[in-house]
Length: 100
Image (cartoon, helix red, strand yellow):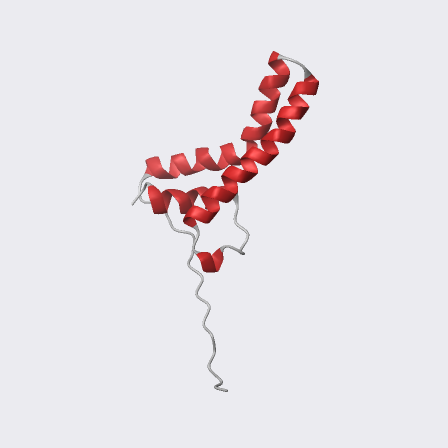
């Protein structure tokens, strides 16, 4: 066997080029983090707290699916096991798909 070392390259989270892209990444990160709670609070305000709890639980599932879809579409496969914040996931997604 050879004593070759396997190099593991981790790319840093990309920086977005324009202020508009950075603002959109912030908004997207905050909506991934707190959007579920805002939707549940709005449903609680408009209807009943029992329905709002159901919407909150369903929102955890839906926002988790959205977050994992954005993560799998944008972060390189070698780095998917690394924990990322919602802002970092939205930065990766926007740098790969919208803000070039």
